[in-house]
Each structure stands twice: as structure tokens, then as C-alpha cells.
Length: 423
Image 1 (cartoon, rainbow, N blue to C red):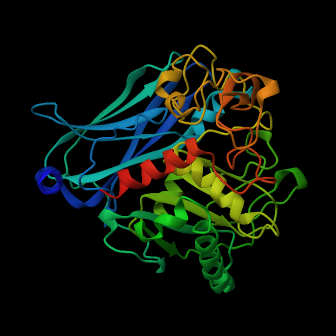
Image 2 (cartoon, rainbow, N blue to C red):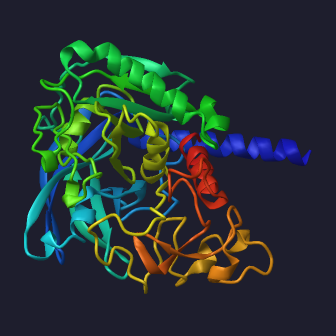
């Protein structure tokens, strides 16, 4: 009897949530483009335009983001009652740029955007950002009238193909794969690389146990020249999204500054997460939480591990557990608890993996007690050797060369995000 009551209650909640979606939204996407500007100490948002896109792939039941991950949140409220009807956390490439030496002497703008299900009536769209104490402050607000004839409704129509199809987009995790640096005669190569991505991706747990909860699609968009830019060796190619190594002067950091241009290509398919395959064998890539991921499609040894590592950032908000390798300074202040689930400064460790530790584990775990694949609180992570701690000595979010699995903390975060997206 108890089982049937719980089943009935679950069905009731799902139906109620779907009714809530239908009350406020259509099954399409509203995209709000803006410019994110500032320097190391300031940030400001400048509105660009509104765009209507044909698909909404997100959950129609989990409309409010309960994870708390991200440096920013987009929040959508009704204009009459100020009721919160949609929210999502995310990060941006601009956030990382703010921690570089250049940001201390230079102002800069990055093109960005947020998406939300298309509203029936006027709504207030806000962006809130964490300050240096980790507290959210409202930075931007814009009233959207969905009946406005200034909402752009024109799109370049690009070919879309299925790589993995498991069912209704609103009940699945939808990944869209985009090509960077593939020329007109390399369409079949891109399709083969998309299949390789899926084969590699679903060979790693916990994705391997959840393949039926994912859709993977590819969008074909040709570039004039082959391969991304490599400034350090004076290679400059004319490509669709202008991907480049040496982002923030880090040789292996391959990224794209124009996120709006990325959205233009991705919007041809239903998607939750954007991953870009770069037509190169040069080791490298990058990913930003709920923004996009990108990496080399043809690295001879480790393209699969690179996919998995970068997707951990994009999908589950996992932080890098290694030390060094980037220009960033003070990325994780030691007096603020990181929002990433696999990193801690011990400021608020009770909310992290404390309840998963073996009985008697020392916090932090001393150097002499470091043991492979034993959960602990090991110092070193988030690019620094002191003050930031990670769950395992090694994990796919640390050293890709010596291990093939995620630690229990990362695996749990990934599984929880899969479940969140599929309800």
C-alpha cells in the first residue's frame, strides 16, 4: 500500500509541475543576448537582442534550479506577482577572464546569452551574480514582452542528424555536437567524429549506466578552413566559430569567445548542453558550467578522456582537481566555500562529501594517509597546492593520464544531474 501511495504522489507532483509549465510557457525557447563587460573588480551587462528559437529541450517539471551551482543565475518572474517560475545556474568565460592579470589593467566585453522556455505573458528576466563572498547580487533585469514584434524569429537552417536517440527531449539529457574547423568536404568526417564521441562518452561510468537517458545530435556547419587557431605557432584559420588555443595565454586552453555565435548554430536542434568538436589532433580543450564545452576530436590517445573531463565541468559543475596549469589568481578564495561539489576550502564542508567519508577519516587527510581510491580530504586542487581540497588522490577531474574513473563524489554529482534533467 505504501508503495502505491508513493507512486501516486510522484505522478501527482509530475502532473502538477507539467501543468505549471503549460500555464506559463510554450514548448519553444526565448534567447536573451547581452554583453558581459568589466574588469577584475567590476562587471556590467548590456542588452543586445531577443531571439525566438524553435525547440525547448529542457525539463518541464524541474523549472527551478535547486542545485545552487554556478557563478550566475538567470531568474524568470511573473510581472504581476513576482513569482519565480524558472531559474538556472551557469558560469561564463568572462568569469575566468576576470581572474587573469590582464583584467587588472584592461576593460573587456564578452558576447553571452541565456535561454528560457518561451513565456505566454510578460516576464522579468534577471541575472544575479556571486560577489567575492559568494553571495548573490542582482546585476541585470529586463522585462520581456513575448508579443513584441522586435523578437527576432529568423534562423540559418543547418542540417541536423541523430547520433543517439532515446526519446522525448523534455525527459532526456540532450547534447548537441557542433563542428569547429571542418571544411565543406569534411562533413562525413564530422559525422564519424560524432559517433566516436558517443562511443567514448558512454564507455565511462556513470554515463554508461544511463545511456537510455540521453539524446545526442549533430549540427553540420562548414568552415572555410580546417582546424582552430593556434596563436603560439602563428596558425590563424577562418572557421565557423573562431575557436582558438592559447586562451588566456594557456597553450592547451581551446575556447570560443563568441558564445552568441555558438548558440546560432546550436539552436537548429533541441539541446540542453553544447559540446564542440574541434578538427585537430592538438591536445586541449575547455568547458564552462552550463555554457559550452570544446576539445580536440583527433588526439591520438586521449580524446575520450578529454571529452569526459570537460563534460564534467559543463554538465555537473565539477571543478578541476589539479594544481597549476592556468594563469588564474585567487580563483578560489580560501575564506569562501566553492560551489563546485568536488572541491572544498573546509569553510562549509558539512555541505560537501563529509557524510560520505569512511569512519575515522582525518579532515583534512594528512599526506602520510594518502591512498589511491580511498575517499578523503586531500589538499591540492582548484589550481593551487594549499587551501583547496579534493575527494580522491586522483580522479578524471585531476590527472587524465593515469586513471579511468571518477571518484564517488564526482560520480554522485553526475548522477544527480542526470536525474534532475530527466524529470
